[in-house]
Image (tube, rainbow, N blue to C red; front, side, top):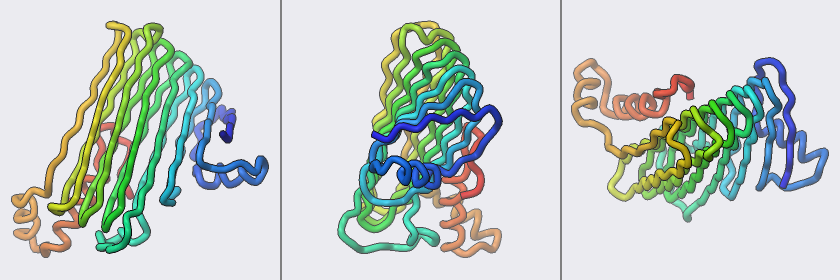
Length: 244
């Protein structure tokens, strides 16, 4: 496992790919398992634009009063215009665990996935609260078309020490074709009553009335379709993502 320690006392935006490439050059270790600990008082936005079919296992450890934002867009290079890909199944697995071990730390994690062709995406997330007054907000949105599949396994853990903590997890899927699959499995384990924990999943298709509304405003069918899909991916109930 590659271990990284970040000590950032001011608001910082980092690219995960660039960060890992620099660390790998120093350590000569593989990228498959990474543990990143963030020091007290840090404010970090981490952009994960690594797209490579394979398995990735990330762990983020947050000390006291850390404000952590993780943005992950998983789009293959062929997906700019919702293009179709006919190929052998490609599988990408990402496991992301956030451990809030310091009081008053906060994590917001956003995932955007667009699957085409025979692509399979296995996303596992875990929000672990180990200290008082910690907050975590996880949002996963996925769009599937062709024969692609997205599987989301999301878990919240709140220890007995994590009183007055808040944990939210939302998973939403948009299915564009009859052969596309979106599977969401939210679960939680809470050891104290003095906390707020919310989780849920929703799966839908493109609304024909919304398509009709766009067309009545002079937008053709193809552009209307793409507009609604991009709107679904870019909007967030936790206010972070806009541009994709």
